[in-house]
Length: 76
Image (cartoon, rainbow, N blue to C red; front, side, top):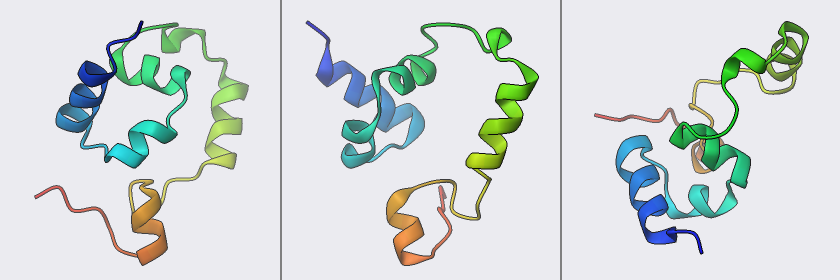
């Protein structure tokens, strides 16, 4: 059984994820954030370019709620 409470605490405190962001994350995203799984070295340049095209950087740091409200994410 996965330590859900620990995973939620880590993503909230280290990465400032909201509970909804945590529960929307896939297991692969959780692995990546926690430094588990495959290293980034396995990512091919063409795969990186595809990710950049399909997921461009935005002013809002990618938070769903920020996109809806059109506000930048402020960590201060």
